[in-house]
Image (cartoon, rainbow, N blue to C red):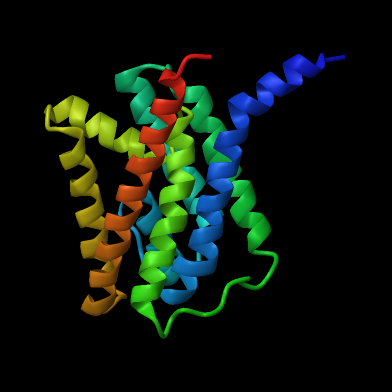
Amino acid sequence: MRSPNRALSLLRCYGPLVLGASILSFGLYNVHSPSGITEGGVLGMTLLLHHWFGISPSISGFLMDVSCYLLAFRFLGTSFARYALVASCSFAVSYAFYERFPPLLPDLSGHPLTAAVVGGLFVGLGVGLVVRRGGASGGDDALALVISHLTRIPISRAYLSTDLTVLALSLSYLPLSKIACSLVTVTISSYVIGKVHTYGEQAKSEPA
């Protein structure tokens, strides 16, 4: 039987990863998907595949994340593999759970700017919690790290290149006005991720 301290340690270790992934999938299912607001990177690609082929993000997201993680394992090693696996599985399971119910939030498809802001907040908070714990929020992180490692470009440019590529592909099913809103949500989510991550680093640096 595991001691209470052991259980608490596991909760502190993996709880933020599960919570962050659940918040992320909640925002994608309840805001991004109904409103047509897309993201860059793997997140945006899951929405694109869902639109054109009806593939659930719980499946496509998991498969793309695994592919990116394998690349990262090949070039970067295994230091982040455990946390990344927990976050990816948590996203897939929570999104599949949300799909069993209709969206819980009001339909914001008629208010794309509002959807972009709200969606960006959900994505930023969810991803930020995962990053704050030291894990990978998804295949985006692994892919950007691999690109930066192989090309020696800054990690920020690696993220930007994947985001812009997916947003450009998303023009195949989204009007330019919604792509503009997607740029808004990407900007907001990036800002929130940075704030949550900084708060985590500050908390860790405080004396016990």
